[in-house]
Image (cartoon, rainbow, N blue to C red):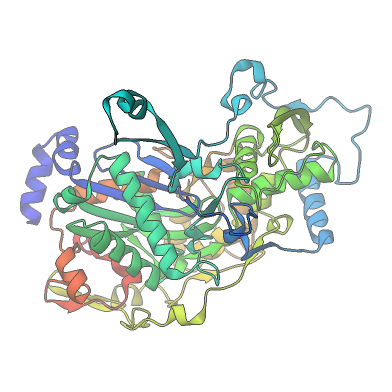
Length: 575
């Protein structure tokens, strides 16, 4: 098979290869805020908000509660020490050479640099100024008739009913007065399980969202799924049980014929054509770091930070209110998703990392229940402070979610066992492939609180324990995720990482490589590339095997530790 693949690759045109082998491969890359799905031969995936709104009947007493209430019963705003946030702001301000939080800019100073002043001006016809709530009703035509004299009236009559389920961004734009419950099945890189949102409900919502995308966006109906294979590109944050359940969703419920799992950081390296890199994924709610050497992810280097783009957006609001530049409107991104959408757009448009004062003129909106949407033109200040929170996370305020019930972690199939030793491709692949190179092999993902991005990158790279590899990784940093497109982030990462390296380390160069693809979907693209080039498919899981007995590959031995399933295909490339 390897010889055939090499001969074929030498003769085939890349576009032909992608067309031939990518038409029946579907790549699914789920995240906390968005899920990216598409055929492997597509250049760009469909990116859909990872949420769902379900209709519920009003209570018998006639009372209504916000459609957000059910999901948010488990969520409350954290109460960090305001002093810590203010200190973090002032540290950032001193680095950026701007006034401190309680300090006014000198009147004699030069005017601050302005952002894209007219980018949100209503008369330019931007969609922001023409906001409308989602239409939650759908027409239902009457199909019966009584007699000839009334048939015309009955056939032309219509009635409206509430849509049972609403997906994507439309779900986030439902008026709070409507009887809908909004749910987000993934939060902070894990299943959003709570006392109010059960494991079964999370899985049902994932099935519904992914099935809707496959049907409506890719036009693959359930009866035709057996002709397609799925590539799951999963973030490093998911644990064994979560990976196993997503495999069950893809194979058992969505009915793909075969599936394979790949690690998001590893796929990103492939998406940019890199075999060795330190991959830094700054997503909407979680930031993760992992190092890849010669096409193999190094488990000991994986760590996560509990913040992302949405935290920057909420910090933007906090900073404006603290500096009294925000209008007197009830903006609440924690409990009103439409407010978070607005803040995300403001962050993406205005926030960047640069020295000196940096302000911008924007139109912000107030979305209040049972009131028309109102607009307010305002001057936003210190727009370079919020993204610097990536390096000084104490300026962020994280929402708090109670942990999932302990019973949920009980896995009857022992998917959480600590050992990993699987037979693969005619040989034994296990811990031995790393034993001689890396001194530590953790069995669980490392998570850090109040650790900045620069320190996390340094910790990840230095944990490899080899100076030659460390030098290569520090010069091969890859930024992915939506926040990676922030103006000024690349030089900031290079500078902060260089200064965070201990003085006793013989390293004096740090470089962030330019991404060949859009950072927000480079992992999806890498998953597509791996799937197309995987001629042997020894690592793929067949639906019948999974549904009946779990995972069986090759000799039929059941793989217990699904967290490392993503490593199987890499063994093929290194064979």
